[in-house]
Length: 351
Image 1 (tube, rainbow, N blue to C red):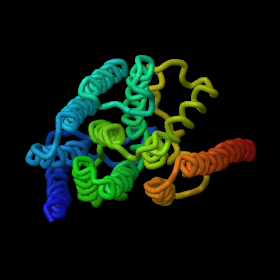
Image 2 (image 1 turned 180 degrees about the vertical axis):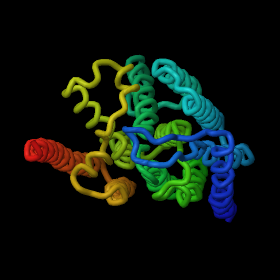
Image 3 (image 1 turned 30 degrees about the vertical axis):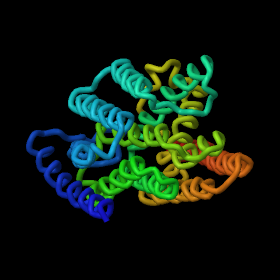
Image 4 (image 1 turned 45 degrees about the horizontal axis):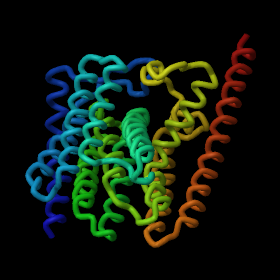
């Protein structure tokens, strides 16, 4: 019942905080203004990240006695990511600075024993753990930021992912992870009504990077199965959508010569992400968001199936997820080529 009351409070408090944030955003001119790359036509407040993260962190601070030093370090790291993201919303920070701070935050987590445990406890195994943990958390943090390009997409995905983590944490008796996940689910649920099309407020970099960091950290500090392959498969499936978007978009940009280094990768802003390509296929923005929701739900169900599964089943489900994303990638590439060809033919017809 304690958890239920906290969940309800997280939903209500975030809903109220978001209404206040909208007014403050207009009053102090903290707005995301329309431009060529963006799809909204009116200025929209950028304080959604603070409106969501402040209730989340305050609730967890009140119940801090429930957590050990590892979880507390995650929350402190989340606060740093939130502040850096907010400063980036106000006045764009350099990509190198943001990346450097993100890596330093992950190193702080590692010093508090928050690492992926997919490698043995040997010298080389520990080194690999640290490197993969940095890559995982920094990658997911930025992947969620990349996906924050349509109304309700990022917050809705975090709703689905955090609920999946909460369900698995409940059945595996991980109370700390359960609190982190279910309160994150509640805060996103309270924020979503204000972010549905047409959005009254945006998450901004502060919100999307904070949510990405929290999901990635939950995946790292949780113990998802005794078998290592099953244990790593669960968070990979739950976070399959941002992983796919990051990998697919990066591969396509490198192939097309749009990015040539990490700095360009972080700074490049284009309409070539998962959701953009679905719209190119002919879906309306709301339809693209719902489609991505459904993919994430399917992957989340697969992850929950692994609770009582063996490593063989885990490999099969990972192969299935890879096959699904491969089919989606092929359709998106073909759709983009056909649309480009259609646009060229249309211009020729006009001439």
